[in-house]
Image 1 (cartoon, helix red, strand yellow):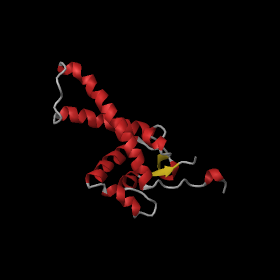
Image 2 (cartoon, one colour):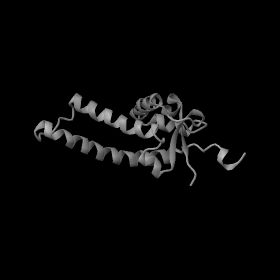
Image 3 (cartoon, one colour):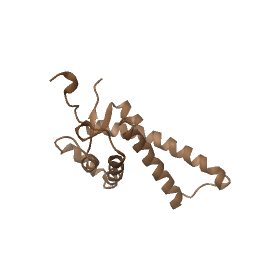
Image 4 (tube, one colour):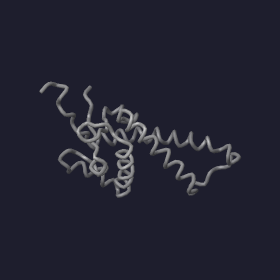
Amino acid sequence: MNETERPLPPASLLRRLGAVLYDTLILIALWFLATAILLPFTHGEALESGNPLYQTYLFLLTFIFFAGFWTRGGQTLGMMAWRIRVVGREGKPVTLWNALLRFIVAIGSWAIFGLGFFWSLFEANKRTWHDLYSETDLVVLPK
């Protein structure tokens, strides 16, 4: 077996959390920009944070951010910085369905005090709940 055929190692929890931190900062900036785009429609008035249309808008924007990166190259900007990539099982590209499942279950993984992420510390291949449910893997890329 040559060097290129060797499977890529799974990403550690620390590496995952590093990428999450980077992507969170980018998302906050994107949310600010998305909100600024709406201001002309509200005559410059602030949007209520509890507004269901506004929350849905930001939710969909967030999904589009992640799904777009995951289905086109398998890496968000944070994942690029930490040299990790999401791949479908057996190295296949991530589909939109995989991305949707991954996104929804990742929300649950966070909502239960991050338990879905910490699961990777006990799982043999370091997979989180959203990796398992969406049939994807997070791998470390070579330098």
